[in-house]
Amino acid sequence: MKYNTILITGGAGFIGSNLSLKLIEKGYNVTVLDNLSPQIHTEDSPLYHAIKDKVRFINGTVLSYDDWKMALENVDVVVHLAAETGTGQSMYEIEKYTDINIKGTSIFLDNLANEVHSVKKIVIASSRAIYGEGKYTCKDHGIVYPTARVDKDMAKGHFGVKCPYCNDDVKLMPTDEESKLHPTSIYGITKQVQEQMFMLMGQSLSIPAVAFRYQNVYGAGQSLSNPYTGILSIFSTRIKNGNDIAIFEDGLESRDFVYVDDVVEATILGIEKDEANGEVFNVGLGQAIDVLTVAKTLINAYKSDSKITVTGNYRLGDIRHNYADLTKIAQKLGFKPKVSFEEGIKRFTSWVENQDIMEDNYEKSIVEMKEKGLYK
Image (cartoon, rainbow, N blue to C red; front, side, top):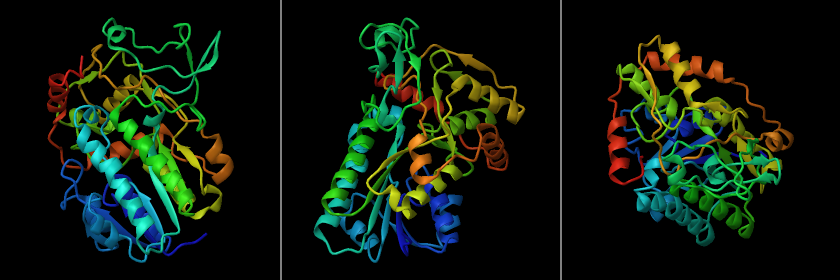
């Protein structure tokens, strides 16, 4: 179905600004609700300037009922991206994360339930974090979903996940949408709750709802100043400042890195296709790439002399591995990622080379976690 006006919360952010521009290009009217959070972006942000004269912009917060009500005027579709996103930070700023991610979502849904509106579809940005330690197979117990790793094991350098039944080593598998949901961080819990609230209230209010479980999204335009989230941007800022790279655990922990253009394409398919209604979808590249490979790739791309140290340190709440099974989104929406990791890194690093070098606040974030007992 084709719609006219789309509201994007967090629409001045990394994913939101890219989505806004693509929707405008396709002929949609776009409204953006964003608080221009200093941790992520400000009024000086190129992302904000790229959209500010092209959208109906509301500088407001998802914690304001009135801001929501104003933003929802004459809107057909809501894409809810606004959220706090740092896994590590969420473990010691619990109230902040639950307020923005859960309470902000509840205020929106309260508007839908109690006010006159024109909303015909709602889309929520969920996260791979809701899976916790994703899907594995055990030689004796078949498919298993390992529990969160424990401090005493990681302190001994045992970073792998084990079968929850026999404690043997397990083999990583792509995580599909039917996999167990058991987040290992406050951030992951808030995203699970957001998703469940959206899907439940969408059904209750007869408004089609769609959830996208994004993997690790990266690309040109992402924040280079936020030390709490985005491993490629964090590493890039350290490298451009001439600092060395300290890698957690043994460097073999892996993630599914998906380029922002592919995320935008998948999200638009979810907006436009009725086949998406009432469904949840993984969005990723469908490949597991370890952190040591990421660091080496970036250092080579920047022709840097920065050294890599595998520290054996770790953060409580981090997962070991997770990568997406994309079977469902391919079958139902026809989505297939177009940007390989190699091509994505070329695009990303080329963009970084043309940016001002940002202050490296990474060590500050580590100190904060150490003080809270979350970094070992």
